[in-house]
Amino acid sequence: TGALPDPEPHYAGSSTAVENIEMPIANMFIYVHNGVLYIDTPEDLEMNLYTATGMLVRHLELHSGVNAVEGLQKGVYIGGGQKVIVY
Image (cartoon, rainbow, N blue to C red; front, side, top):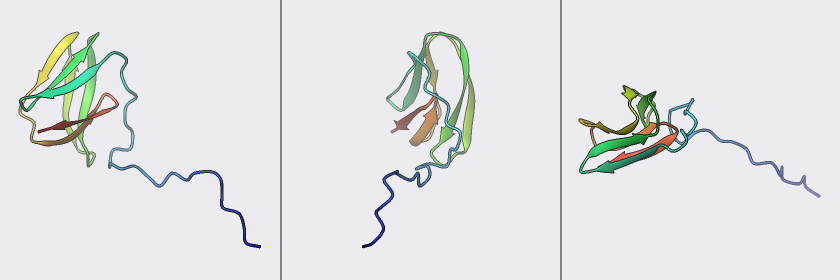
């Protein structure tokens, strides 16, 4: 008989070029409205925003509450351990 298949799944790589995605930040919400990215965070913090290809777009210094990030091109972004689509 043939060999049994390996029962362990194999990780084939990331679906994006970002290798070190930050862990999700607790109680932080990222959303888009009218082409503007909003980040609602319970505390002051710093966060990097990347494209899906891994290019650093911005280093953000966020304040507690809702922060607006304007001027982004349409596309998929990754920040704070979350993916979001700006459209």
